Length: 123
Image (cartoon, rainbow, N blue to C red; front, top):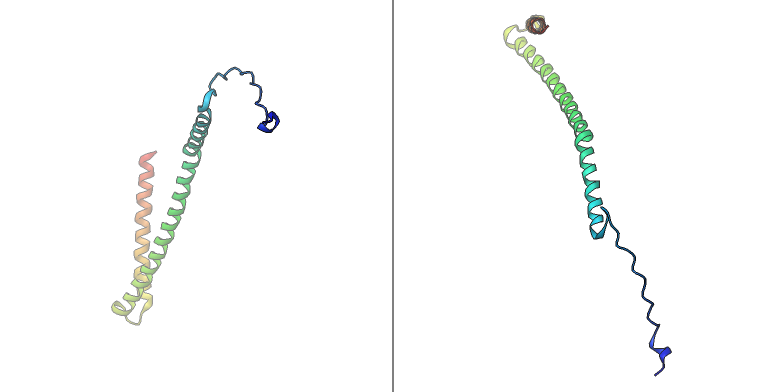
């Protein structure tokens, strides 16, 4: 047989380069870099993004609750006026408005007085 038909000649041995040293030596460096990136992302999330998410959720739920309370208060006022108009003061809706308005005014005065007293206690 012919030596030329046996295939390519074996490559000459390369000179061995010195093994890398330091924190990125060996096959562990990809996992170390991935762990470092993950630690940085988690730290940024915990310190910056999470508080912003909590504030945003609080605002959204607070606005939602405030709107629901407002709508409920309006519906209860309408129902109370209707009930008073039909059963307590038939045909005199002004009296129903007077009773509901007086009740809400008294409620506002009490809330204002309690808030003022609490502010005076604090400072």
